[in-house]
Image 1 (tube, rainbow, N blue to C red):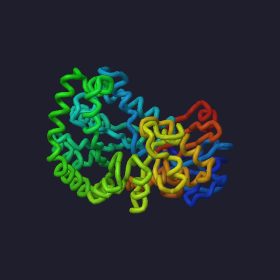
Image 2 (image 1 turned 90 degrees about the horizontal axis):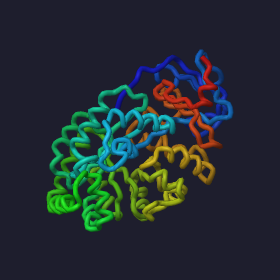
Image 3 (image 1 turned 135 degrees about the vertical axis):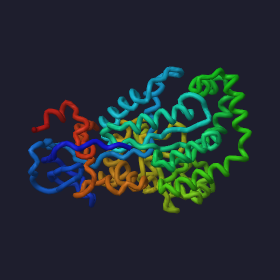
Image 4 (image 1 turned 120 degrees about the horizontal axis):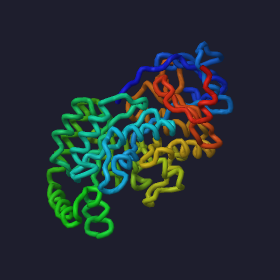
Length: 387
């Protein structure tokens, strides 16, 4: 999480603005000192963006995105320094209107991309700062990774983690490792021969009895630090209830609609992937994000593995029964609320100046302003800038 000194005052003029009360109307927006200073007619800012024929929307808040892993390791065994990977990732985020991004960093027992050394290197690169996008850490804690527990606890206490998610991919990896094709995917990511990786998974799986106590410890650390918690890929309502008892009030990617319904009924945030909406369904055959969003059960959309999907998913849903205000809340106000970020997610005086200009017909971001600073301008946006 970093901050960049904001630029001079900016006026956004002539656009259709999604206001905090859900109304969409023509208005001018003035940004100053990193905040939204005024919403109304006229602006005193000398620097303006002409937003005619565009939507003016709150910046997107992505509470679960792991597409950055493709910049860290674009091919198995081909790794790049986190500083390079994050620079390219930030460019993608801002070009897609994402002004707050929680990087879903998996801290696993697997060597390589998701290992403890990779975790530490990425956190150090994020801590170096200088980013326009507010990039935060979503720790995806692998349940069987007992060797890294003390490090994770220390990083939570030090404020280097901003959201904790309970993951347990070990059973699926154990099953996959038995298959030569699926197993090679895991072993290549870990940089190991398949036989050696299979032996490692067997040793890790033998730790099963120690997992519940470790989950209790890391949940207690998250509660003490005041950071939100999520459970990932819940298979049953009972599993979701167990994580809720630990303090996890975010249900990520429920595997069945019954799980999502139970989570929503209990007051949890229900997170689904935007690619699910854009592609017309889950690539795994799980619950439909669009159907759950239209039913009011899915309350948050994330990028999951593809950053451009967030903008497109919200606009697809806006054209349906949800309308723009409810659809955009799925990618702005609601994820901000789930993450405990009350300073953003809507366009209102006093809020953080995270604002994007969007061509809805083309499903394209024209300009992104992050904390009052122009952070991305497409060719059309540059033509609309008046100094």
